[in-house]
Amino acid sequence: MKKKFIKTFTLSCALLMLGGVFAQNEGYANRRFTSNLFQVDEHIKRQSKDIDFLDTDSYTGTPYNHPSYLNGNVYQNNELLATNVALRYNAVADEMEIKESLTSPDEEAKVLTKSPEIFVKIMNDIYIFAPYKGGVEGGGYFQVLHEGTTVDLYKKLKKDFKPERKATSSITTDTPAMFSDDITYYLATKDGKFYEMPRSRNKKLKVFGKKKDEVKDFVKDNRLDLNDEKDLLRVVKFYDGIL
Image 1 (cartoon, rainbow, N blue to C red):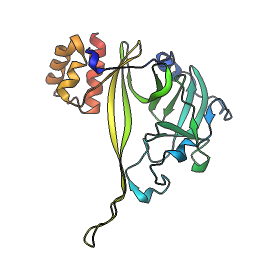
Image 2: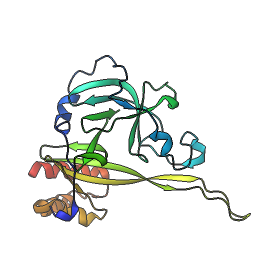
Image 3: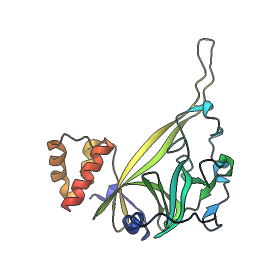
Image 4: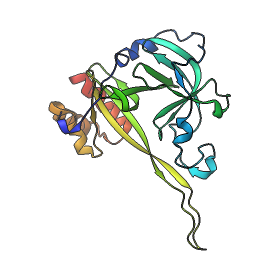
């Protein structure tokens, strides 16, 4: 793999235990919110792009992974901390918002502490926090698309934001603020190196290093599109199997 695609993150052993954790019995009782697990929800209000996220009529798209809270679990290493809590990923602030249940008021939401030891499962989606150079600053949340024997595939969701535009004449109309997805994929090794997948289909092949030609043949034979998430996932699983 070429060095120019490398973005190195230090991952905790929590990543290596994901498979075993989710095989455990999840029938534990909910634990009370504790100060070492949650932070006061100040960031949610500070990082609002000068609009009210609760006023969904004032913008199109969503600043979140999903516009509504969904049920999920919170884990710390191999311990289930909370089950059937309401979770939502704020992609604008790169924060995991959490409240006690789906019926709890949004105003009661808090921000999950950023830690490589804490990860969540929202419905069927797993999110981990990877620190940058050993620290929380610069790190971020990634969705786990594939956890393999040798490599993993991660998805980083960001949001492009366009502010509201007022009409400039009688023949134009107001344009509401807009959020749109900006997605980057990473191939991660078990020693914690993240290789960013370029936007170009051809350049993506370079990330597979010495196995590039084998992967290229697999893509061609199966008529796959490396810019399609399902096809990319299939290719990474193939690559993981030939290493």
